[in-house]
Amino acid sequence: MLIAAIVALGVGTYAMRLSGVLLGDRLKLSPALQRLLPIAAATLLAALAGTAALMESSHFAGVARPVGVAVGGLLAWRRAPFVVVVVAAAAVAALLRLAGVP
Amino acid sequence: MRTIYRTRDRALLRDAAAIAAAMIAVGASFGAITIAYGLPTWVPFLMSTVVFAGGAQFLAVGLIAAGNPLAAVFAGLLLNARHLPFGLAVSATVGTRPLARLVGSHLMTDEVVAFTLAEPDPARRRRVYWLIGVTLFTSWNLGSALGVLLGGATGDPNAFGLDAAFPAGLIALILPSLRDRRTRVAALAGVAVAVAVTPVLPAGLPVLCALIGLCTLIRPRTAKAAQVAKQTEVAKQTEVAKQAEAAKQAEAAKQAEASSATAVESC
Image 1: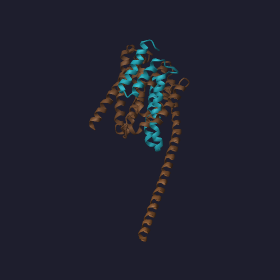
Image 2: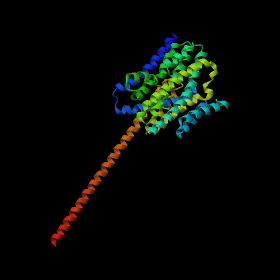
Image 3: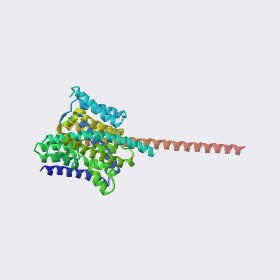
Image 4: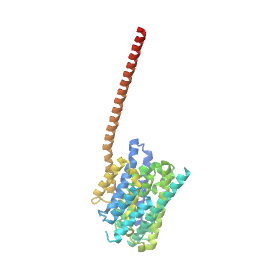
């Protein structure tokens, strides 16, 4: 049962990955729709980042994580290197938690 | 040109190393949590190779440990449904050969898609996709194995702020796309919708609901179309005015010529 569940999840996930890749090629999408796809992907990624930054399951994620992400986002906006953004966000969140901020 | 490529490659490798380090740490916590739940040792190995999707793996082992494998499958698949639109967006990038598409599809994750879309040069996108994909697959599996070996010694990844590192990394990667006004408006609307519905919907659906944000594209396009139409109208009017002006000048010149001709004649 355990192995079946893992394989089912793996196969299902792979099917969704592959079908997107194959459909993108087979479907003759109109230029307008093709311009829409990167916008849709950016919107999904932004929503992932936004929910991951602000929410923990169905609750607000506290203070340390959103502040850390905000510092990282600000650095990214000022065109700081990717490594700096990621390390600064983690460091700020970790230090806030060390200081007792939830 | 080659030097530019080499510099960009070095920057890309540095970014890949940063995200790989974070992936190893989070992978280790995944391995450790799985063992802490009392699941067999092979579970994290099988999951990290076959599923290869961090969020879904954490969600699934929690539900499996709670004795609900069916819910684990459905919740995990719902969370991963976003890979379908991602696949559409990177379809041209993954590769043209069937084997490349079969293998490349499995490497698709949020980070890989974000890195790929952040690359402005279409010729380099395939390289970015594969480099980041292979790096993340390796580091995620390495991390999972480390977690199994080290167990509870890996510590809580949140204590190191890794939960803030991943959203910040994603933001850094999508910022260039957000410089486009239409993308920015759609994405911000999507984030607002996703965050608003997170408390009431199961994991995975809020992010899909963010696609509602694409509705914002309808209004700006109409406004833009109107603007374009207006500009064309103005241009047309200017053209007409110019023509009229030119005609007037020609007329004046003709008259002048005629009058001078008359003058010559009268002489």
